[in-house]
Structure formats: structure tokens, C-alpha cells
Length: 110
Image (cartoon, rainbow, N blue to C red; front, side, top):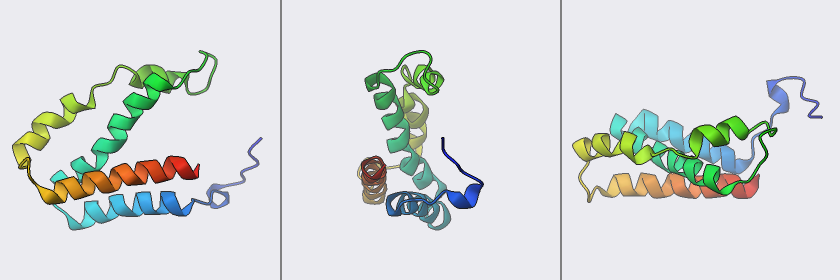
């Protein structure tokens, strides 16, 4: 079992602290469109993971897998990003790459 008595028993790794901190920084210091950019790596990763992970229907995460395996996050983001960003926007690219690295580091530390 997990033996958690409360929220204070959950100690985030340095990778997850950075992951959350970077989201917060983007949200508090950049134009709102950049927060959408920062969310894109996670949404794309969920689809990929849902299609790669194998599990039985009895698994607690099966509903998550089922809900995400046929997702198309680009449909939700494409129109918004195309409307408000230039294809060569270096800050958007930097934020996207930063969050991709954060996704990697988070999973690698788990």
C-alpha cells in the first residue's frame, strides 16, 4: 500500500518541481498563447503513451488509456496556434522544447 497520511507525505522530485515551476513561469510572465504552447508536449505525449502502453481492462489506468489513445491534440491546438503565432516564433519554439525536456525528465525520474 501507499501509506500516505496527507498531501505533505507527497514529496515531488526535482524534475517535477521544475516541470511545474516552468508552467507557472510561462503562465505568469508570458502572453497567454505561450501557455497553450507549453501544454502541447504533454497533450501529444498522452496520445503516444496511450497507444504504446499495454494493459488489461482491469488496470486502474485503463480508462485513461481508452480516453487518450485516439486523441488528436493538434486539432485542438492548430487553429489557435496558427491564429496567434508566427511559424518562426523563437519563443514558442523555446517553450515547446523546454516542456518536451521537462516531460522527458519527469518520466525519467519516476
